[in-house]
Image (cartoon, rainbow, N blue to C red; front, side, top):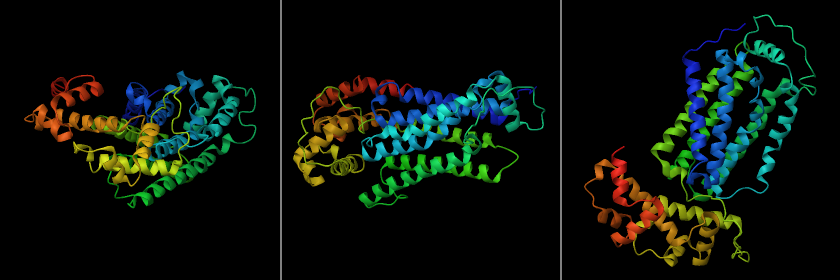
Amino acid sequence: MISPRLDVFAVLIFLGVIQALFMGLLLIGGASRQAIPNRFLASYLIINTATLLEIFLCYSGYIIYTLHYYDASEPFNFAYGPILFLYIYTFLRQKLPKHWWLHFIPLGVYLLYALFFFIQSAGYKYNAFLSAYHPEIPHIAAQELLSEDPLGIKKHINLISIIFNGVYYGLVLKQFRMHTNQQQTSFWKLSSPKLRWLRNVFLLSLLNYIHWVYRTFFVYQDLQDYTSAAMNTAVIYYISFTLFQHPDIFRQPFLALPEKNKANKYSKSSLSDVDKTAILQKLLHLMETEKIYRDNLLSLPQLAKMVNTSSHNISQVLNERLQKNFFGLLAYYRVEEAKQVLADPTQQNLTIEQIAETVGYNSKSAFNNAFKKLAGETPSAYRKRSLQK
């Protein structure tokens, strides 16, 4: 019988399990759940929780107490690629692709196929665990109920999964290339912090994928699941660090759930999805990079002129893609910048009036009203609470 053990890798992996679960639940709770990209990121973290938990149990030997969980996360091989692609697609394009659920058909099919293994006895799964992790230990007597792999798919699951996910990494690169060409910038010289975050998450995920390919084709005696798990844990902590240091990356405005039962007053619009995406990307660039919201005289016609479109088109894009109007967009960015200033200990010398003027408000009362509406408390209360942490 295997004796469970704990070492540095095991502890690191288990911490990754806890952190991934915590971050996943955080992203699907509260106001952030309204942003569809956050839902895909939460899904990515939740499936990481399931995968890392199985690796921890197998690596440490504690799987002997939960044998029916062995290989339970294997179907998620068909979820990582689609979820990463959909997260980046919705973040960049501010819309869901048509029939997006089709990307998860392979996951559903393999879940059904995996039932051939899931129905096996605990003894049979114990032998499968020994074959993979401890081939030197003799097997116990156990009978196969049905063929665990009648079509031979499970035997080649790593190769199939690598090819499947490789296609999605190619699709993600295509999305980045289209975006950078449209913005006339470089993949390595992205000006927006949100885009740099997106690029870094992709590169870290790609590094994990390359390691997966390496250990599948070049490592024979040791599965090296624990090294993959350690790398995944590092990615999870990077996501956690970014969420707490730069929470604005995970907040609106970006693609949000549409309001239910609301008639589409733009049904006769001639704007295509491509046009809407291009307009929105220009708007976000003006707000996030050039910070034009600081101009307290900025008007909708002026903004439309900057984007080289009509005021009507601006309103349509804001309403459909962000569920905001022009003034709501200005208020969002002004309040978000104000939050950063109020929470900065080095800027305590600034008065509320000065901060209001800096972010684009003409009066303290207008600033207070907007701040309380969006943040749920007054600027003074927010500053006091933030500086006490």
